[in-house]
Amino acid sequence: MASARAPAKVIITGEHFVVHGQPALAAAINLYSKSSVIPSLTDTIKISALNLGVEATYKPTVESVKTSTPNAQKIIEPFRLLINEILNRAKIRSVGLHLKVMSQIPIGVGLGSSASTAVSSIVALARFLNLNLTTEEICEVAMIQERLIHKHPSGIDPTTIVHGGVILFRIGRPPIRLTPKRNLCFIIGNTGLTRTTGDLVTEVSKHFGEDEFEMVSEEVGRITLQAAEAYEREDFKELGRLMNKNHELLVRIGVSTPMLNKLVEASRRAGALGAKLTGAGGGGCIVALSTPEYKDRIMKAIMDAGGQPYQVLIDEYGAKHSDLDQ
Ligand code: PMV
Image (cartoon, rainbow, N blue to C red; front, side, top):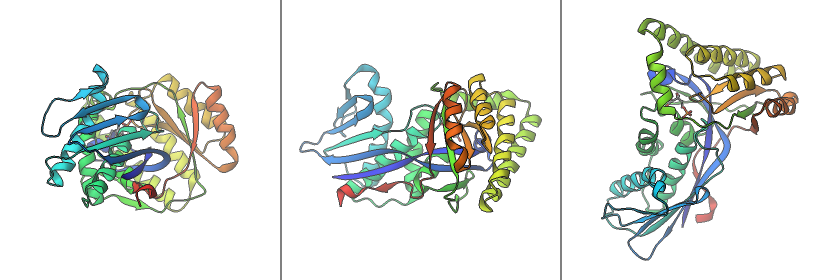
């Protein structure tokens, strides 16, 4: 048996514009998906998405997939593509295995649940098949699933999840890992409203004329670089201010909602150093930056405003094998 776990992620600054080449700052957080692979005696592949109650079986050499329910296909297909890619890379045509995927990450709310389950599955499958993959290769394979689900993803989700810690990300460049700071507290506020990242990314591209888009895009890029510097020198007050500024620009491009703004306002009033929507917007989550003494007040404020709060810590390790298969 081989097992692996992978964290969730939160974008601190720079979402959306990262798709258009700007830098973005993201952190891996301590909510996890876990995948395990066990051998099967027949040459059949079985995929179980345990917390969704969905299963599928198929033979790698045959295209037809038998799923537990008709709409399970949409959930299973991304995993089938990942398995195919891993088998190709391992030069294996026929194999029997059972991939089990479990996750504690809320789905469709901007915390990277699909990238996390992809990455934990890739790491577990590669381990099971004795295939050595570099971090870049793991991200490359995860992008197959990300493209299917999110249309034009930047790659920030799998990159942050694979590496762990706090990442300064830019398309086409190696990620820069910043030193994680322990005394930093993130509170997530979940609106509970799911949405489709790909559709929001497409909407944003249509929102402005080219010149205005370019101007906002460059401003957000500058905010991210300043945020990374503020983070490095542990100037969390400045980091919070930059997160607030970033939120205003996300409001301007039309991806915030009244509920997201309400959670942002409630967090700031309760003492957050900064708060903004995180991820694609249109629902999903906000992230608030807090000092340890304000975190309970912020959590309560989010709850009173109708959101679901989670206090999260930075995951420093990224995707890794779990000890179960030692
Ligand atoms: O899927 P989400 O909500 O985590 O969005 C990711 C951030 C975007 O910049 C909106 C898209 C991307 O691929 O970078």
